[in-house]
Structures are given as structure tokens and as C-alpha cells.
Length: 186
Image (cartoon, rainbow, N blue to C red; front, side):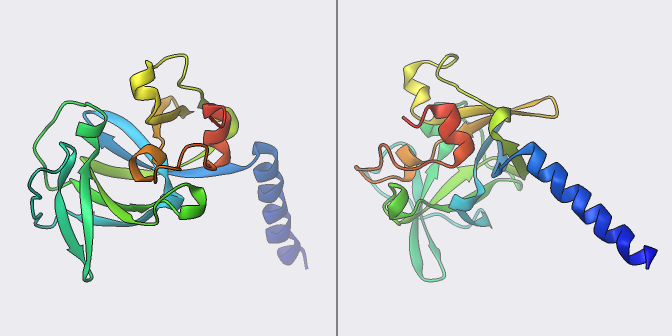
């Protein structure tokens, strides 16, 4: 009987620690221009290796082209250009994040490919681990940055996908709790 109580007690202790740490939001981290960035994992539907792209004439500068994903045409945007970061050639570690912002959160419901240099891992951040970026960044970048996450000595720049994936009415849409606290919920 003590064998059964032991695992149950351990699970109870883990659950208590999780409650003490508070609610956490999961972010998919990736590297661009030697910095670590992240987006809420709930918006990322798939991670793809870089397929052949079809360029689109007269497209905005951050549009790399379009790809076909299971018969569906997806626009691929270069986040480095959108955020005015140093450009570098794609490598075997480069990936496309298929992301979608639901209409109820201010998005268009359309899937968009986001080109990144390398996908890293998932961070689980509590609200206390996310700081507002408004004090640090100029107004130009503040539109795209929801906050700065800190975990295990690393700084993670949290990207607000609403201006990138959102519809014209996307302003003021709901953010994940950790981002809403850092951004001031617009």
C-alpha cells in the first residue's frame, strides 16, 4: 500500500508546485539574427522545412513568396525583414512556421508562413517572467513586440503576431495572459 501512496503523493506535490508558480503560457522559441524570439505556441499549427517558393511579383518586401501545403496556397513572410533585422541566407536549419490567428482573436483566419532561421524549443512562461517592452523599445518595434521573457538567464523577445497575421480590426484583440500583462492589453 505504501507503494501506491508514494506516486500519488509525488503527483500531489507536483500539482501544488504548479499552482504555486501560477498559470503559464507556452511560447515556441526560434532564432533570428542571433537573438531568441518566441510566439505563442497556440498560433503555430505546423513547422515546415523550407520548400521551394514561388515568388510573387510586386509583393511587399517581407513576402518571400507562396508555397503549397496540402493543396492550400500559403503566403510566406520573412520575419527578419518585417522586424528590420540583418538578413542572412537560409540554411538547412531554416524553417517556416505555419501560423494562424483565429478571427475571434483579431486574425483573418488565414494561415501564413513565417520564415525563421532556426526553431529552438518551447518555453513555459508565467506572467511574472514577462516584462513590458514599451519602456525599452521605440514605438516602431513596439508594435511587433509584446514583451520580453526571462527564464534561466535567457532573454526571449516575445512577438505579437496580431499586426502580422491580423485583420484590420485586429487591434485590441485578446492576447494570451502573459502577453496581455506585459503589453498592458493595448
